[in-house]
Length: 412
Ligand code: PMP
Image 1: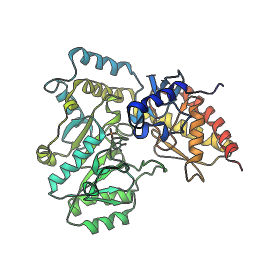
Image 2: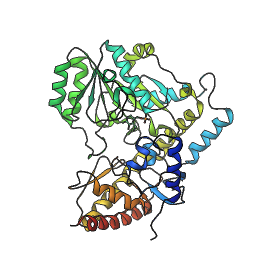
Image 3: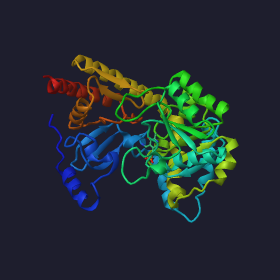
Image 4: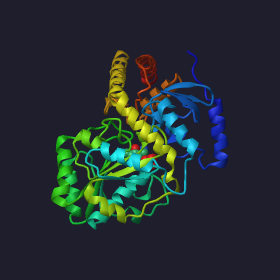
């Protein structure tokens, strides 16, 4: 097989640097992948596949960082989008899809009585902690160390220019560690508004971890013992594990839920939802954005939710993901590479043994990218319902070759 090259991508990346600081910012920069072994720009996508600006084709296991659940350019979602586009997108007031989508979400997500819409995950996680503070009259927010909740100031984990004071009242504990959670609750007793949590641990650069029963129970009991609101950040897992939400899937008693990414199969919309008793707190929080109200993503979201339910997409991605995980484990074993594949099969992540700096993973993923399989060396992967068994077979074949190369490369 001829290995992919990326001349146009890197030409464009150099050019981008002239106009955009760093060329591409955040985790989409080629510097966060295996520099030189991945493309920098994508020109089109269809189903489970993307094509880069050099014309190289990939089976994409990043699914646009999680927005692609049904497949890119899904015909039903695109038709709903076209219909709304024909009427217009961003109006002076919300479109007439505002109520249908709100009603649909409240009817779908477990125990939620209301919702508010925005664009990005960061908008709604910030909103949710503000509702918790309003509802309790307290300021403290408990956050698991290393969890990502967005790019807003209070939850930034990297980057300059954010005074420490803007992160004050944020208290950290270790995910899944009941004792450490007790420690921080004890230390902040009397001033905790909420705890914000991803449904399971899916931080970058580590194996994923499912929450233990004891951890879920202790988080749930914080509401009754301490009056703390439980906020589930379902931006990344939402609609991949359970149509009623991942809080329901893992047994959390969520007071507030946040969704984004997959809910409109790639169209920009996010939503915060809450229990009925927090409606009045929600009304008191200032929240708006010019594009929060545009109609096209609402059409996409309604159609995406219909399609997820009617097609059985959640079960399908679980099955496809399980095939992938099984295939990777067998291929790695056959080539004498020790790997761990962690997390739910619908959004797995792979690490290699004895790979502190992730050098092996970067090498493996880079070699896979040059052969048309788009994994990520640091961030969990995603499975979409447009994949086929044949795609998984092809992926596993390429993976086996890349495991072999990895062994050879790191043999001393
Ligand atoms: N929370 C989680 C768990 C996320 O994965 C992300 C995005 N990766 C966010 C919040 C922030 O979402 P957005 O990038 O849409 O602002």
